[in-house]
Image: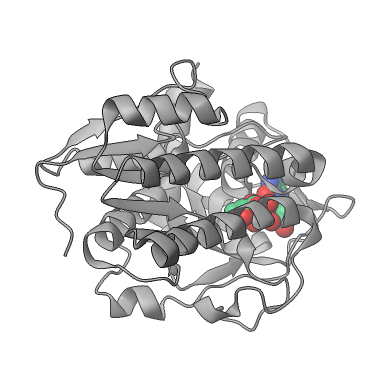
Length: 312
Ligand code: GFB
């Protein structure tokens, strides 16, 4: 058991979807939370990260900072996704090693697994096949992050661990239609179609790929659980254990939002990997299970979107 009580905990990437959920969740713990805005600390700058960590000396680190985006952003900006993520994770993990950080949790992504991995995907499937081309750049960076954490464990006996979340969603998500993930995009499209009285809304691809979704508050809770209870080389999948075809997800979103028009597919847009359902067995075996049902999570996220994005 690793206790967070009385500790200083650095959440790298606290303004992002996961980082902000981690900060919300950490407020229930007896710990001091450290954050830094991008203006205060550029995580791609090695010297700046080393200096910042030397001054602040956190006891524990959640490495949630990353350049993230949906399928189109990943495919359009391969250099940014590879370079920025490599720099962020290398700088933070190496500085955590230098400053004797007691525990570090690195956050990856389910896209680290081979495109045609056997489903549900178990943790040992890593590096057993080719990646999905639309996000191989991001995936390679995230695989490097897992390996960095493992390397510091092995060579320097550091308690650095990795969690691999599935597709996440929730309040604070990115609702920009060119760079977002599918769920915020569908919420926005359905909302705008309903408000404008449109007869149809367009979804990307065939609608047949399946995706697994987890509410970001569940993800944050799982990360704290791992931080407190897990210490081993192998990364741990963090998911709901259930997936849904994109077309069915669209119907669910339309139902929550109240859009009753037609759903039109745009096959000129990429589908990406056909399926990436992760096995939840390892995390369940460690005593954690998700709480937020998908429909409730979508309704809550839609309420947040209306209050914070649509109104603005
Ligand atoms: O969430 P998403 O962008 O990323 O897309 P991935 C998931 C699926 O939803 C794809 C379809 O099959 C999309 O074609 N989709 C349908 C849409 N309509 C839309 C839409 O309006 N917007 C978007 N964005 N998708 C990402 C990776 O893959 O998942 C990242 O690129 C990361 O590296 C992330 O791993 C979790 O699930 O395909």
